[in-house]
View 1 (tube, rainbow, N blue to C red):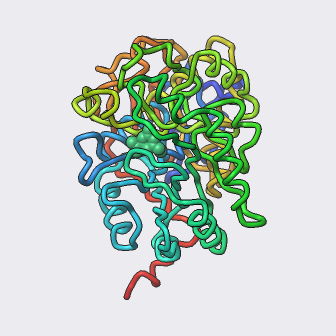
View 2: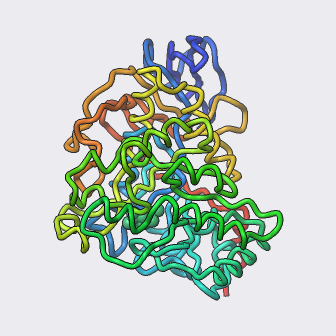
Length: 420
Ligand code: DOR
Ligand code: ZN
């Protein structure tokens, strides 16, 4: 007997078929027999669910902003079934014991699959974190950001060498920061300029060990795409938001790297084909924390729930192709991370999102992040009505099944090395 059949779904190639699941796997595509659970999906487009390889799930001392429960509820409602958490927690995730505590916290709260990266700090050996299950390392800060201290170029050179000797992936936040305190979004963009980002990328290029292919986080301009070494990530906020979208000193638009002028945003969007993958850099802060003077406000925007809906809205308008969205949200992130992607093939993760393709106005009261706000309020998004995770219904019409999320450790995971 099958566990679940999703009937008459429309596949990305236009074919209409039943999807049959058993024990967490997609076992048949075509015409399926009886199952314990049977869901009619006529008229719904089915795509592989997204992996968001850059989120800050907060939790711990930062649970007022977000925790694993609310952050993964937001992920599922946005068609994301695997989140990769960044280690700039408070305190930072740089010891094996903190790492294991973080995994326990995630296991207790997460409703979707998750992985956790290891933190990188000058002189700290990455090996214990690799054995503890780190999927990758960083984001490593080549410039300071909220909750992230910058490494010097020499410290970066040493850290990248150590990470490369493990055969692990390094993910790097590249920026150049001029002295000064910004009072407006335009100041922020000038202090952390696109030209500075290019210089920072060129410097990183000079310290990468031979044979290493790093991952470059949140590239904010088209010029940077041309010089970035390794895989290139772009966020939805750099694709869809610009300085002109906000009042000049609106702290809710403050993020690192900064939002750029509209002309630069358009140039980045036009470079869609050169972007390897999209990740949200979901970095929630509370409204209270944001409602201060611009110079004092933390940087960061929530985005895990709106990432795929904004892109699917572009698909519905015909601006970008469905296959490019699937490639950049479901396939490329997993290729870069070295893990199986969500998909219809054997050995792929049985994680899918289903869409009626009805655009709706993005309304913060319908979203799930604890921070309670979105920079995309009033913009259009196409949200999934049904999300399957590991062959089971995880989210359907606003309801969650509350199955616990599954931890995906990295290749270096070695539980026996963890016992002292
Ligand atoms: O704007 C940002 N916020 N950029 C980062 O790199 C970190 C993030 C955060 O954790 O708040
Ligand atoms: Zn980040």
